[in-house]
Amino acid sequence: MNRIAVLTSLLAVALLAPFAHAELKLPSIIGDNMVLQRDLENPIWGWANADAPVKVTIAGQTHDTKADAEGKWQVKLAPMAGSHYALRMVVSSGSEQIVLTNIVVGEVWVCSGQSNMQWNVASADDPDLEIATANYPNIRLISVPQVGTQEVQDDFKGQWDICTPATVGDFSAVGYFFGRQLHQTLGVPIGLVDNAWGGSAAEAWVERGTLEKDGRFADYIAQWEEIEKNFDYEKAMADWKVQAEKAKAEGKNPPRPPRDQLRGQHRPGNLWAGVLSPTIGYGIRGTIWYQGESNAGRAYQYDDLFGLMITEWRNAWGQGDFPFYWVQLADFRDETDTPGDDEWAELREAQTNTLALPNTGQAVIYDLGEGRDIHPRDKQNVAKRLARIALARDYGTQIAYKSPSFESMEIQGNKAVLTFKDVGSTLYTFDTREAKGFAVAGEDKVWHNATGTLQGNNKVVVTSDAVEKPVAVRYAWAVNPVANLQSREGLPVVPFRTDDWPQVTDPATQKAE
Image 1 (cartoon, rainbow, N blue to C red):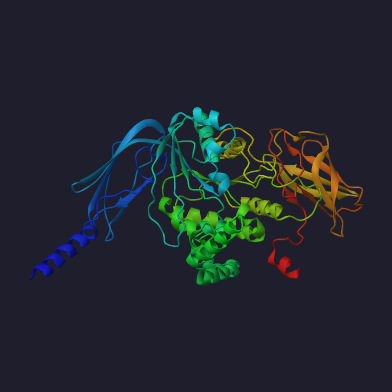
Image 2 (image 1 turned 180 degrees about the vertical axis):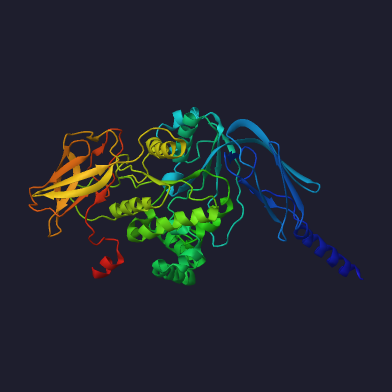
């Protein structure tokens, strides 16, 4: 064999070596400082040489398994009680060994959604105080990077951090405040997985194939297939550079640069594959979710999409109908006192309708927003309302957690008598004796502002001088409603409508116009 052939052969062997002998490896979600979900058979997985034996030991447990032909392996730990005691895990395969330290056992929650969940502690109310006091050795934080792709990822770059003033500032504010409330109340370690992506649409969090198989989303998938066929990011950037240079020469502000739609947070399946997949299967108690703004214009579709997404997550995780609690859209833009149709109101209704799924809950917050800012800074009270749900439903704490909601309507002449459920100790108006936020319509379907008068602890009598024979009532049905009805415990009444008239986000309505 000549010298060139020998060198070529040696190079080939060197290049192939890493693939022939995969090293023992764990995903980033399994590492130092992690929190294991208490009272659960926690899956532990990773990679090793094909067909190699793998051993996992922790807290007196030993689990033996064997990697498959692709080098993948998994074991399930026996359930453990919550504990602050720092554990050590050893994973070994042949001569290779990985040692993980400072592991605790407690409650693990995924914190997901778009920008209002991504919004960090440093940008929330009282950031200096919140950051300076964030010394919680047994609250652990991990963030998943934003990767938009159709290719399913099995890992990400990240690590579990101990909650300190140095680590909490960039973490999800709603996630941290929620976890802190649980930690202070339950006294157990808390693990928080932040995978939120600002501006993300719900369909990006669903597996692409699931949407393609569901006829309800055929038109939307077809629209995306056109985008995927025709969109050229490099050309879009080149065109933008020309426009930006022209604007600069004319002393004008340049236009916004184009987004790479194929790698973004709107493309169906992108975040399922790129953000969620690397964490699927990790032992959790549940998920908190703050999203919907990006889907408000398609609220009619969200009625189907949101429940499909939750079901998809649960099926993929393989941990049953784990708790899934979300934040209803906050108030936004200028206050509205002219009753009528509204896409944000319809999105809130779609969120409320999703409560039909088991083990779900909703935090109503149209009283906590900041009007013209889509990102309210008060994340503390948002988190408290989510924590109320979790503490009551999952941990047995005896507190109010449901917002009062409409139950029935009886028409008595020119009056609509409404009955509510889940009112806590009683219904209450926090600023005036009159209940504001109601509208009524007669058979002409024209909406008029109405007056609400409390009757007993769970009824409201609604009237309007403009409507002699009411047939339908709406409450807080606006992007920024002027509404003041709540429970004495401070939970706002869920926005509702008694009519089933066509919605503005219904494609059939839009075609008719």
